[in-house]
Amino acid sequence: MRNLTCIVCPIGCALVVEGEEQGASTTAGGDSFPALTITGNRCSRGAVYAQEEVRAPKRVVTATCPIAGRVSAYEAGRSLYAPRRIPVKTLSPCPREKIPALLADIYKTKVSVPVKAGDTVIANWNGEGINVIAVRTVS
Ligand code: SF4
Image (cartoon, rainbow, N blue to C red; front, side, top):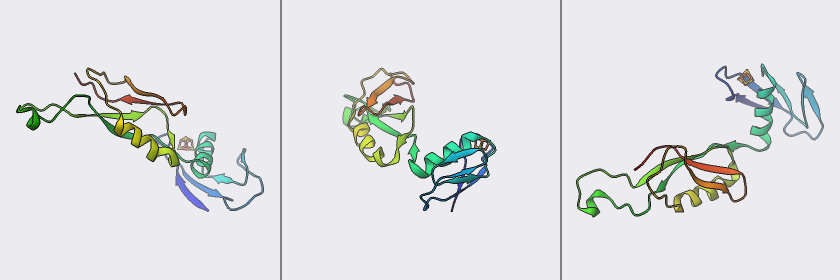
């Protein structure tokens, strides 16, 4: 048995997932998934979330990319602050086991400025359909 909090909407239903260790199919509350009984969900989205979280967990990834050609104000001999990295995030969740490889590529990707919030920094990462976007405008 596993207890989860549904994060799909602000209600945050307390979900109980049973049957992870079983091979048989079960049905709960009209939502049927192989070997899982999911209760506590007020709607079917919670059952889908619990199924994914148990079988194939995914996460939205946030990180920073280096900005191409930027050196620190200290190295440049300036007193002005000029960011050397830009915050980025994935537009869709990434399978948890692939996050280290995705982060390694994000950290290697040098972003040319100017860049606007929402611009794609990495498109279709590794053919996974995951796009990484800038979350801040940097000029
Ligand atoms: S189960 Fe449905 S109602 Fe409950 S938190 Fe998840 S999405 Fe919201």
